[in-house]
Amino acid sequence: MTSLREQFTADLKTAMKAGEKGKVAAIRLIQAALKDKDIEARGAGKGEATADEILALLQKMIKQRQESIAIYEANGREELAAGERDEVAVISAYLPQQMEDAEIKAAIEEVIAETGAASVKDMGKVIGALRGAYAGRMDFAKVSPLVKQLLGG
Image 1: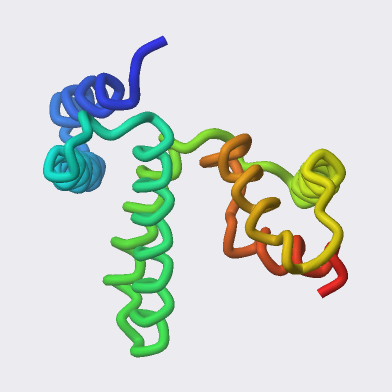
Image 2: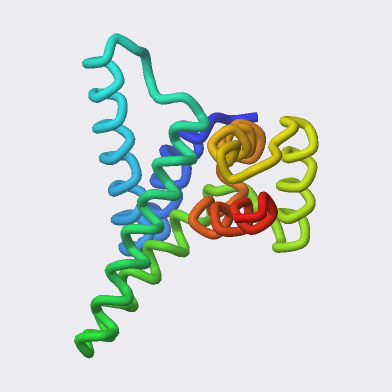
């Protein structure tokens, strides 16, 4: 299996040959963010970003663009929102398939049982285990309230 880094490079070449300017721009944004992440990691004494860190970076980029879309739509700038939506589509293609709501709930219940979490005080332990097992497949902004609810919060 090719790494995400190799996939970005291959897709960039393909998009350039096909003349897909929007896709080329989005992939270049991903590569620039990844280079920044690598520089940050080197400064901290680590090597290149891991696959999980790359997935987290992609999710962060999508979240930033979704926030921008909401702002653009609120201000009547539909053409800018459309550009952001195009970038979200390109970035999303590199993420693993997102889990359905029922799958997420079952995974949370399983982790709660495994960790022995009994109250909201154990929420950090549950979220940490979920991040380790399901990085890139869950939207943790939506998961946190559900964990809290299942722990009786």
